[in-house]
Amino acid sequence: MFNQRNVTIVASIIVFILSTMYIISSLSVVHINIKGSSAVVTINFFMPMDKEKFSESISILPAFSQSDDIDMQIQWRNNNTVELLLTEIGDIKGQEIRLEINNAKTTLAFINKDKTIEFSFNSKIKVIEPKEALLIATDNSILVSFNTPINLNSLKKYITLDAQCNIEPQNSSKLSKKGQADSTIFKFTPTQELENAKPYNIVFNKGLIAVSKEILQEDIKVQILTDKEPVITKILPENNSHWIGLYPKISITSDMPIKEAKLYVNDIILDGNIIGDYKAIFYFDNILKPNTQYNTNIVVLTPSGQKSLQYLLNFKTVPINDDRIWIIIESGQLHKLTVYQGQKLIKQMICSIGANITKYQKGTYYIIEKGDTFYDSMKKIGANNYVILSEGILIHGLKRDSYWNIQESSEIGLGAPQSGDNIILSEEDAKWLLENIPEETMVILK
Image (cartoon, rainbow, N blue to C red; front, side):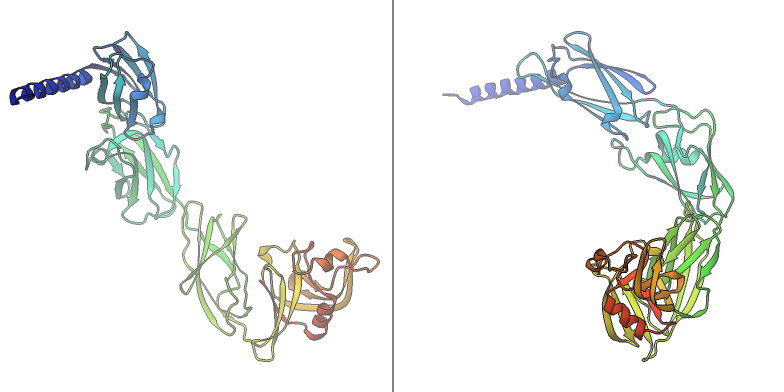
């Protein structure tokens, strides 16, 4: 039976063994030779290592880039000593790196090796973005990316600005201590809106020190040009128009290429459909109220993000008296033509909107002509009972061939899109429309 003295001896032996194993596991000598974005790390473990499984114990954590951006080659000098050739192969150079070796197996059972090594590569300071003069909006921030980490305080000390800016780091080191503002990307936000069509410079002055202690030998200049203010040269309908249809197509033209157009009405913002480079078209989500004043503002943005001034478009919609006939044609799962008198629905018909009628042909039209039959000799298609809308869209009965036979596909496909650029009704509905709907009737294509 163990007495107290024996217990103490055993415990002391266990502590000694554990301490010895810890010392042995951590005992090694490291030499690091750094040359630019490459480094040779030589480690002598003072005991034979399991070479085949050694790579499985290594992990690499760069301060900014991904681990894949560090290439590693392993070479053994002898059974105890390894050389690790590490190279930065990504865009970011001269960063700090943490190399961890965890439970690297030796050839001796129960003894593994651990080591944590931290060092920094070196790199000359370069600006990688923007590479050329940058066109920006007057209220835009500017992002400047370096190839190597820079400390914010050092940056502020060695910079000359044509306009006062707030400077904010946009990324941070995965290895930095709390409050250490190292970054490779900085956002420059002018404290006041810049002037249009004016050059500005950001100069990083000679003497700027990178985190790797490399010093900038020559000034680096980033050139910026603010964009011109776009002008909306044409708006249809014109400002202060009256008798505007209940589903107007609002079109604008700019003197500069645009990437966005916005229409503000009450608490709603409508995004315009950009046509080409200089035009945009707006549609409201719903039919407007009759005899109602609408006050809107329109703004366009150039590709740089430069905004125009707000342009007023105020208009009043057409009144709808109780006896007035008007029509809504809608696409959807089932195409429908609905006839109203005042606010009262008096007839609804299934129709087919031609597949060639584009989304930009939505809007308000008026019937300008009516007739019993028509025939298009070029397309070899005709129909009975037609009405013509402003801008030339026809509403008519089922399609007929040159022998005046109804095309079966036209009858079967009623309610869904059909080929062509007209709107098709059944024979009965087309005849009713011709006989009951007068010319100058408002037709909304939605």
